[in-house]
Image 1 (cartoon, rainbow, N blue to C red):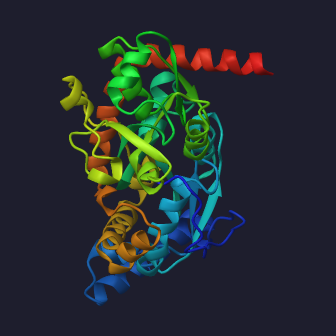
Image 2 (image 1 turned 180 degrees about the vertical axis):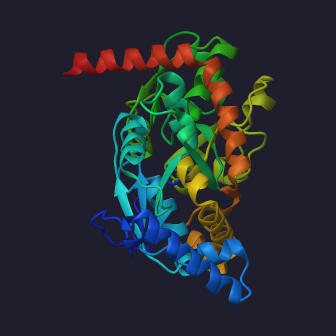
Length: 367
């Protein structure tokens, strides 16, 4: 959804990653402390789950981000945690681990994060789950889950303002006579799948080229290096003066004139594609849910308050981001998204693998 730098809410702190005192207690002392906390909670008439969650978080939250600093995930994270901090009464530490289309960040999180609930991962579910479809990670996928979706941002086909292509039909016609280069942030991405599905449906020839992020993709399209691009709609809507949207991979064009009233793929071409959403979300180790379900519940309930907070709406407006794309979702909704995008990715897995192999081959030639 969001691709550019954002300077608000820069109130995060860097930690040394040390375990908390509670994490360092031996089993006996921990049990004694738990009993004491339980007794205090009961005496105060506090529900059992709240009694156990009362001391959480006991330090700053650490957020692992599997992309570069300054991108869309970073901005989304800042906007949310800028308000979330007052409900959790703590600060947030951002840690960026770009590389291998998110793979580096997830594998680092799974290897370094503890089970206390103080470490979360914040990623784009679509591309990162598709990454597992193309190539399985080094850890069991069931060892983490998403519990807090922030947005749903549909993919679009777009061109630069000076492009000779004025409509999506112009692109399809051109793609039937020659191979068109398509700029995309990465191969394993809902936007890329949308482009490949469109090519398969119409008979056009598209060559997806990963440009490592939305900013680079927009630049490639603006300069004419790419014939057209595919990205989530939010960043294109914000840069409307520089680009023209020609097609939306959604059930409807939710941003209307901000996306040039572009038609949807299903309406215009009679396709039956599900929405090609990017959806950023907070994830956590499954182990935390097993050991501290009350902490996960607290994270979920306080995150829900963020989206209802007027301060969050003001922050989104100040950042000039489309509010229509903000779409909170719980663990069950995130799980459904993961299931759906996995099914779509499996259908187009061979195409993604082929495009990825071709991109790597071309990269080696340039070197």
